[in-house]
Length: 259
Image: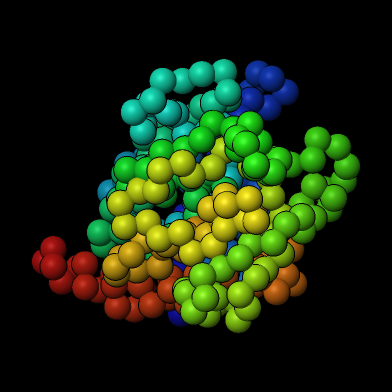
């Protein structure tokens, strides 16, 4: 029996400043394949090439990856400023309706960094353009220098809701995570439950209340060293279990309802 397919949201880049590409970090594919035990399939997140309905049919679950461009503030009713950074409107056009469809269908997704922020925006939430500019907040951005290991090193504690979803999953009330983001949740979207925060109050772990499927999302990057990290591994394992459950039950239910 073949493994289920996880669509990995790709990002748009210019290779050598002139050749357009869709790309995804190999650590995402490694985590999906070797920890979640699913087939990683890179998605060109652009409505010129794919539709949400096509993706829902082809993929069993989705990994909403991190990425340098941010969700455009028009998606949550605000004007763009220099602090909002770069954007990828094509990705916005795919991921935001995809998230809403997955929530409604019970189709599993795991949100990471930008993906975490997309989940909040898709359900009506808003974002701060720059966390480090807020009074009392830490600088959550990636260190500008150093090796990849140094940039993805564990840097702060996330405190989880006692007895909550993430507490039960990780088996601890606090976990150490890396941090490589500039933006963060401002107003929480409809049915979004903040289940973990950094010491400065920045939301770091969320899920969608009463959603029929897996909707766990984190502000950090668990794909780094996912096979060995005691926090990343159970998260990707649980995601893989949810994707397999969807292929066995959820997808069959969708087919029966549309027959």
